Image (spheres, rainbow, N blue to C red):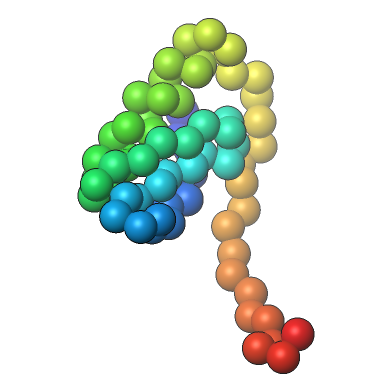
Length: 68
């Protein structure tokens, strides 16, 4: 079993979930639904395109001046 990252943002009335390691994306009316749909999309993708070893992503935050 592999662990992947889900990046989630809201667009209008839907939550969009993306997996940066694989490049899959999905959506749902709730965060939970978006993640479940992303998991399914990723599993289907990996059935067609098996996973090559990839390094884990590093997630961080940074600040930018409002005047930039």
